[in-house]
Length: 124
Image (cartoon, rainbow, N blue to C red; front, side, top):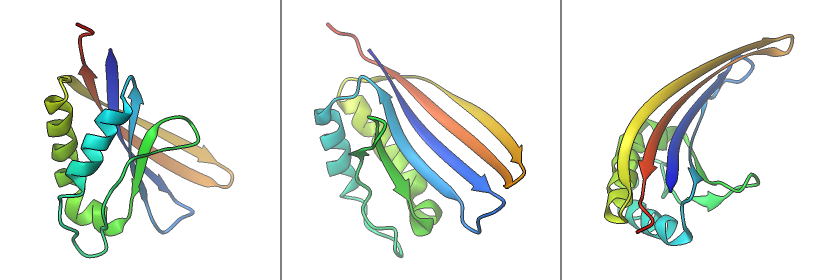
């Protein structure tokens, strides 16, 4: 089984703010997400970062969109917390890769950077 933990950063020239989200893709279970959410809840808030909680989105992926303070003060803490929780549930970190996309349209251009962490777990 495989799971991808994806960090997406989208910048649009028509918006003042940037959007950064975290999501899971693949064979992740509700038990995995519950542990991750419980561990994330132990990270103290900084500014208005709040407490991240992954929830199922309209595309069938567990995701969380960070606000500005979460990005500024806690993004790395969240990432390490997720990696540790995945390992404690028996997932093995395989590798990390990046991808970048740029789109230019009449209404404005956008830039999307994705950082993906691939995990594997044996069925046995």
